[in-house]
Image 1: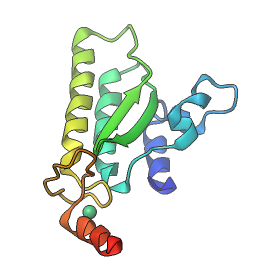
Image 2: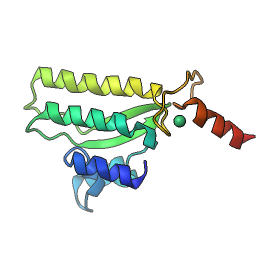
Image 3: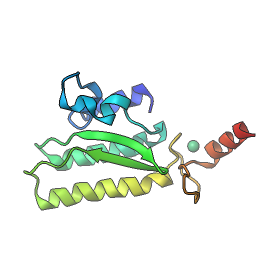
Image 4: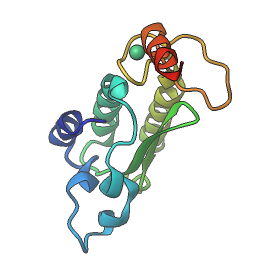
Length: 141
Ligand SMILES: [Zn+2]
């Protein structure tokens, strides 16, 4: 994801994306999020923004910190460092549910541009719209 969008996520959800500006010596410094940033395409920014807003809202006064955000096997992965003990069972269920939903739904959204993705059944496939898929094929030829 390009820096500008990553920065927007960090500015909007400082606790969640705290790893993005972790200093050496900080526990978060060695997380994949600190080392590599958000490892997926710009097309999932809207999905990440909505998921981050929901998770932050559900967490209330508690803090949830992301360790890794990436694309794997064509879908979004949103890994946090564990949920605070103070959260209720309902809060946990809502957060886990939202993450599961977003991870599942990501393959319906083009990872590159955010348009609806076309059906993609290859094992190592990526979520791509018709335009991005065809553009890639044109390059491959
Ligand atoms: Zn696309």
